[in-house]
Structures are given as C-alpha cells and as structure tokens.
Image (cartoon, rainbow, N blue to C red; front, side, top):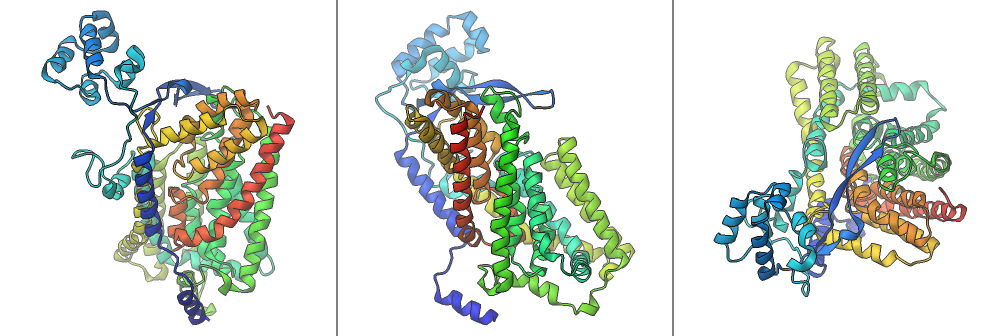
Length: 574
C-alpha cells in the first residue's frame, strides 16, 4: 500500500519544501520594499487594565503621527540645530549635551539621523521640535535590505535573513527564545520517548478503552480550545503535541488530525477568547474599553466556533480512519507507525517504570500550566521546566531499568531529541527573517510594513460601517501572516483601527473582535508562527503539507468569523 502512495506522489506535482516556500516569501518581501516607501509612527506609552484589578503599560503608535522616510533638508536642519545648540533649556529637557551637538555640527558637512541619535537626539525628538520642515518631502525613500550584510557591517542583508532571524529578540520572545526552548523541549522529550513510556501508555489505553477511542478527538480538541481561550496557550502546545501525535496515529488517524486538535484548536480558542491576557486585555486597553468587557458575546462565540470547528475536524478524521492512504501525510506518518509496530502486542508491557514516568510527565505538564496561568512564567521558565521533566524521566528510567536504559543512553536520547527539532528551529529563524526584510514590526522604525498599515487605515476611512468592519477583519487576517504576536499586532493595529471604527460608525468592541478573529485563526496557518512550526516539526510534517489541508479549514473559519463580525455590527456590539 505504501508503494502505491509513493508512486502516486511521483506522478503528481511535488510539494515544495518549507524552506523553499519561506525563501520565496523572503524574496517577494524584499522586492516589495523596492516599490513601497518606508514609513514610521511616533509612539507613546498607554496604561490598560488587566482584568484582575491590576494595570500594565504598552507602547503603541500615535494614529496621526505617520510620516514617510524622506531625505534630510540639510540647510534647514543645520540652521535649526545651530539655534538649538544655544537653547540650554531645551537641550536639558532632551538630555543632550551642548558640546556633543556642537561637535557633530562642526565635524560633519552632511548630517545624518544616526549621528544625531548617537548624542541622544532621536528622530522622534527632531520631529516633535520641527515637524517635516527638516525633510525634503518631495521624495519618499524606500528601505530595502542589502543583498548581503549584517547589522554590524554594511547593514542588514537579505541573504543573511536566516542568521539575523535566529538571533532576533531576546530570551523572553521572538525567535531566539523560541529556538532555545524548542531545542530544550526536543532533548527532554527525546529522553521520554526513549523510555518507551508514551508508546506503552498509548497501547494500554487502546487495550482498555475499547469503544471509547472515538471520543478522544473531540475531547482533546475542546480541551486545547479552552486552553487557548483562557490563557492563550501557544508555545505550551509543542510539548503536548509530542504525546498526542503518536497517540492520534495509533488510534488510526493521521498527523494532520493531531496538529488540528492541538495547535489549531488552541489558536481557535485564542481567536474567540473572552479573557486572554495576551490579546483581549491589551487590545481593549488600547481601544479605551473596560478590560475583558463584552465577555457574554465572546463566550457564545467560543462555544459555537469551537463546536463547529470540532465537527469539521471529526468529519475529516473519520474519513482518514476509513482510508488512511487518503491522508496527505500518509508517507511521513510512517515514521510513527513503524515505531508503534516495532513490538508485538505481547512485547508492550505497561510496567511500573512506565507508569511512574507518565505520572512524572503529567505532574510536570500540570506544573507548567499552573506556572503560566498563576505565576506568569514565560519561555525561560518553561524551558527549565521541560528540562527538569526530561531529566526526571531519565533518572527514573535508569533507577528502574526502564527499557534497559543507562546514563549514556539518557545523554544520547537527549542529543537525538535536539537533532529532531533542529530543522524546526531553523524554520523559526527563517520565518522571523521575513519580518526583518520588510523592515521589522516596530512602529517607531521606518519600514514598508508601517506604510502598508497606514495605507490600509486610509482606505478604510469613510467606508460604510458593515463593509468597513468586514475589511478590518480581512486586513487583520492578512496582517497576521507576517506579524503573529498578539500583543505586537495589538500595539501596531489597534491605535489605527479603534479611531477608524469611530469614523465608520463601528463600535470599538467590534474593532477588537476583528483583531482577535483575524489574529487567532491565521496563527494556525501562517509559516511565520513559531508555535505552529514547532508542532509541525514534532509531527514530522512540512508546512506545505499542512497548508494544503489547512487552507480549506481557513476558508471555513473565515466564513464563520465573517458571520460573527457582521452580526456584531448589526446588534451594535458594545
């Protein structure tokens, strides 16, 4: 049967590798910056309620502060700065030394923003003081990356997108934190998988739960949707998927089903959340709404969309179970089927060691969920927790002689687990590189992305309310293809979308609804999502395979989301 599938694949068009797809997107983004001029916004700190009585601050853009990148008007700028060098009060407020400014003016015939920034005089300061008078506004400039280069030498280069993407951000966010966590998680679960505890547990369930297996798919889907809705589960799903992928395949389904009931379900929950601190609370705070307001409508939305999406998934899963060769991933799923078939039924004992390891794993995962929800744990803490779980499993295996493991076997299993997720870690860096090629997602830095954001805002002004709301939803969905951080997208988009909603006669609650639906659903599809790529890596699946299935589900979700957006406009959702 597998030979037939391989023959069919050879006859058909070969799906491009994930690396090929992302590289193509990088080149398209680079070419786009040649024709789209760069722009930026001024930013400010806003305070919002978190819903638990506390407050947080978020840096957001100022709606009317957009300007294109222009050449400096050297004569005007020099005149203004010479006058500024004599204004001790203004210099003191800007914390700029008179000597430093005078030195820059004396030593440089041609002034640049970088030179002035080095002495503490930022572009923001200059714009606040002189507006656009210091620019030659007759020309808009593009910010296109070099062919090659680094931040330290010659500027960012498009062919260095992988390295720059991998080191982007810090240990708490963006690529570098996700990559580090992926490698630690891969190593930890390499140890757990080597013990055979998960395989033994799966078969123990299959032996003792005859007739109940069909409930597994809907129950897992709803559970992960609830996790996404309540605490914005995303990176956490990677760990759970390491267990659920082989479990789902053992039930007769495929890895696409496993990815759908884990990360896709979690993102659907996130999209319909009524209480997520990472999306709803921030977006409503920026829009000037009470924290976590309008929960009743969103709870109904979560129930309806979760059940409909669950039904969609179950229908697909049953079709695959009836004929596994219809699965796009039938060939790659062979990895898991072979692992599960390596032993006969009699050779799959569920020993005391297996039970202790699974209990330790269950306690560890509960510890992670508690830490994220109650203690505010982020990527560094989660990585440490995963490492401890893996180390504990290895110690138990050695002490109880599970699978005849010794200390060196534990180390080798950790190494193999890291190796398994290393290709996925590379994809995370590549995906981040797309954003860097577009100029980054910072509102206060010149980029083509900021110009696109501003242009959409201009297009939506004056459009009829229902159409405006629907296009806001479409824009948020498209925008999330490159900016997947919910808090980051809220900071970029909501300061524009909230006042635009006022102009279009749409309530700000609807604007927030468009944001969360667009951001959440597309997170289950875009190759820029580090969490999705992590789960796909666990499932040994290329993004192109996932996209072929998920594009249909995205259409299904878009129709449901559109219905809720239009319904919210009709009822005047407040």
